[in-house]
Length: 95
Image (cartoon, rainbow, N blue to C red; front, side, top):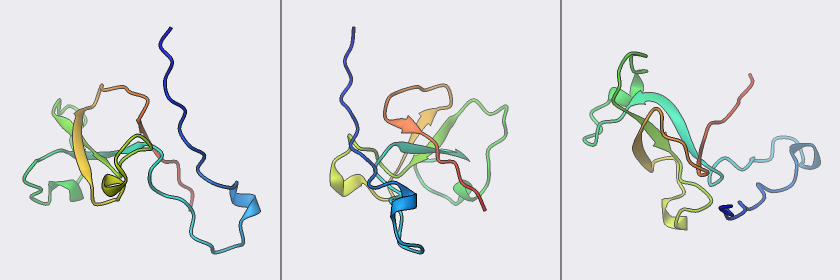
């Protein structure tokens, strides 16, 4: 059985932090976006790709397994939409 490394904790649980304190946002997993990947970064990432488009999608942010210099929201990569790995994921948000 393949044993994967354990990701570090994202820090104390939100209910233990003072209100309005910045929350950890980067470094847990590469986050999927709905945008088509273009290595030239021509602004297409400002729009969601067509669901029938089979090209690569944008991942942002780096993961816990990334070199620290790449753990930033401006860092991006492209993977096919059916890619699966322990360092890929998504963020749930609520207004």
